[in-house]
Length: 188
Ligand SMILES: Cc1cc2nc3c(=O)[nH]c(=O)nc-3n(C[C@H](O)[C@H](O)[C@H](O)COP(=O)(O)O)c2cc1C
Image (cartoon, rainbow, N blue to C red; front, side, top):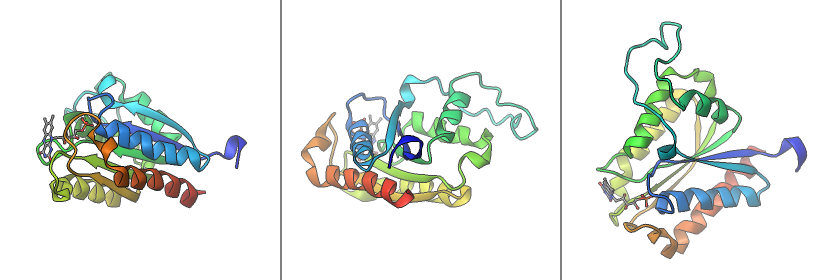
């Protein structure tokens, strides 16, 4: 593999905590993808200006989104990556506000951006019980079905509360690494 045929993988971090568990997991997935020959890039949603959807339907009435922020550039960027890594921590049984605002803005996007995309999901949580992530997992599975995307892997990290605690969970890091490798190898 090489030159222009290299697979491209975009990591999207939905936690505001730099060096936190979500970022570590996304990094590990990207490292696996790099090992399999992909070019990777990482986005921190909290460092972009992504405003909430206003449900004005300007986008559906043939116009542009009324929000003048970083989302349209991000969508253009996302379009050039066949594989996306979506990471969010569990906040109150759901995703972070940054992540949910990002997903809500998919409403106004050209739906062709999503169809056929491969996704890897990763979710850390303080609780030791994976079930805490069930609403986020269910939400993303339903969204993927609806938009015609394929979820290649879901890497859950229970029992990690403090910043960087997931580094103590080698099995989860290995699963993340492998998910990155497999997605690239499976998509080539
Ligand atoms: C506002 C907030 C809400 C949270 N809610 C939950 C929760 O409902 N269940 C849970 O298991 N952990 C919860 N946590 C813990 C985070 O999921 C956990 O610390 C995670 O590892 C954070 O990821 P990060 O290091 O990438 O920020 C919450 C943390 C915050 C800051």
